[in-house]
Image (cartoon, rainbow, N blue to C red; front, side):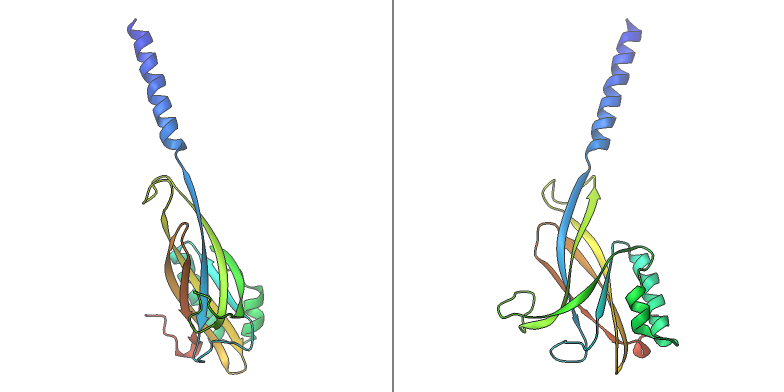
Length: 178
């Protein structure tokens, strides 16, 4: 009789562990990254590449490489065109958008890349309906005036209207000890 009770307790414990392991939630969120520079309307003469990461150290390593490449010899624009850094979630070419009344663009125009980022968690911060996750971005471009890059962090909220601004600057003005 004790053997049957022990076996039942074992099966019950196994079922509870299986239930706990099976409670995995998947969230997604769109985020618009508006790239700004020194110009007032943030329109760029060449492609602006925006890289999304879900891991900060992968983003920081890629940023170091991008800044070093911009400061080095070679065509930075060609480098960016073929670049997909280790740990990169997704890369987009930002587009110039002019739209009055767009809540993401208070000035009515700007260079924007939009991403949909998905993440898993077993313990969502706000229950099974909403959660937050950190996303990390790099933007880079090359034009006739120089090579530019910048980075930013952003806290995504699932189901929300997410937008952030990423300012780029000439790579020769960037010190990586920031």
